[in-house]
Image 1 (cartoon, rainbow, N blue to C red):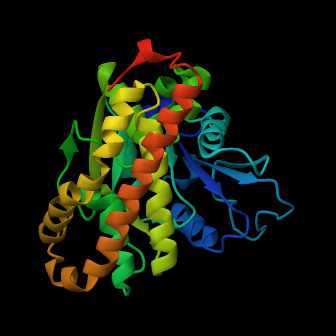
Image 2 (cartoon, helix red, strand yellow):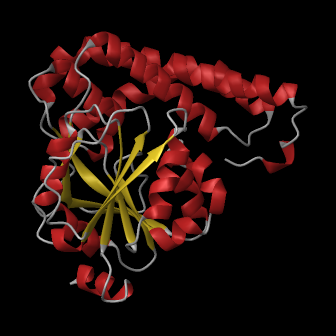
Length: 319
């Protein structure tokens, strides 16, 4: 089994998998995340890394973590950016494979074993099959397909495809090659995935590694999150682009809903969830429009920043 080989890679004495959870200590869903990890067959070889803002709140002490190989709690300044927090998790992990799990996402039984079995060869990253943890809400389903559409209830393994951000696993040794620059890549994994492929590594989706994701289920929060996700995505994607290219993409942002909508409809149909689509249309439209506005903002803010800096990095343009 591959996870036993990973045990040998770890020197026969360390964990085979480190689960990194960047969390707010006040998040009550964390208990359910830990419970999902506790149900893994290889839990005694699973290391838990909890990265949290030091806000005076404490990680709950009744999480029942004695079954794991070990648990580390890393407290950071509340103003630490997401990329830095995730990089901190990587650096404090001990296992050869590091799996990021959000504190509102819950691994299904067999998730860890399937994940480790898929980490072979030049696969730098392995993604999970994403399922809905709060399926009673149309807004929840809309947000699940907005942010995880291609990976929702994906029944077949898939190689060399782009993978989602946040809930994903990586080979630690490959990530450490990036040094401090990894923090900026971690603001949105899309940029990292493109760079990994450029370096000759492959990406893989393992459907047997199922993760249930709790989605935003109210309109105000959904619109805000879609907007902010668009800002972060565009800023990360275009960080090394020339000003002219940023402005071009900002001007074309109004096309984004027309590009994404058919893909999302296709994902609803692929998963057999087509009957849910009519009820999800209002939330989908709101999310698509908010996301497009966010991307426009991200491209324009980056363009303005580059203009102020004299476009000092113009020679570093990447796609």
